[in-house]
Image (spheres, rainbow, N blue to C red):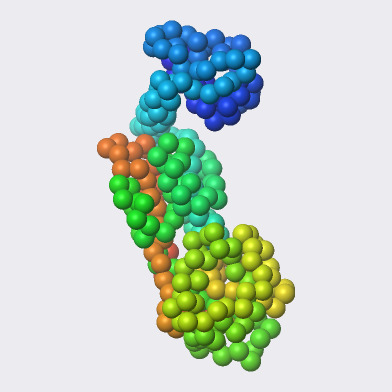
Amino acid sequence: MFIRQIHYLLALAKTRHFGRAAEISHVSQPALSTAIQHLEEELGITIIQRGQRFEGFTEEGDRVLQWARILAQNWEGMRQAAAQYNRQLTGILRIGAIPTTLAITPLLTHPVQTEYPGIAINLASLCAEEIIRQLDSFELDLGLTYLGDPRLKGFRSLPLYRERYVLLAPNSTPDLSTSQLSWSDVAELPLCLLTQNMQNRRLIDAAFREANVTPKVMLETDSISALCAHVRNAGFYSVVPHSMLNPFDTHREVVPIPLSPALSREVGLIIRRQDLPSPIQDAAWKVAQSLDLQSHFDSLITMH
């Protein structure tokens, strides 16, 4: 009963609504409310501010909620450990990835699920700040992000590859020199870039400033797929990490052109620094350690 009470409390924190919390917990609303009331009686404090509807958590309730997240994480880790001892590791691996890495996540998730068929994966596209927040609140197991972020102090990190930025050109422009281009050359082209709130774009803007040029940005988007579609079909160019070449047929659809001076950034996994990671976290981490993503991505340029 105690673990169910903890999960009901977390469901209420997530939905901020008794009815929706009961729905995702697969119980009736009275049963959920009663279970939380019993938890309050057992702890001797008021956790929920009540009126005709949910009005939030008390100060004591916010503190209890932090412990509830830790308890739920530890319970799931214990359950996974028991399954692992039976050689039947199961559960959900929750990964948050920055948008520019989403296209390469199958190179991680597929080996994990090949090694551990009982693991299901919940993959979310999130900004770096949200990945950090959700790891801290036990809402994620792993994060895939840039490793140079100073906010990652206190997290364990595993470098996976160093992305190298290239000009992404439509294959219909054979007159464009493909040996190497300067940032000044790129600034003259009609560009499609990600929006300015994204880390990828801020890094690219800094490179243009360093070259003392202003790029000709014709279209901005927060969608990777829209960006790639405009390069393929609208005659635009873009500056992207070479890892984003993975879904393309670089012989037919696009041409990747190296840039000078080179621009690169390290990408990897992060996890909360804790004494006892869950078996499912540990399994995914060990699989990631065996990958050679750098050689794979570098080959996408040399193949052209």
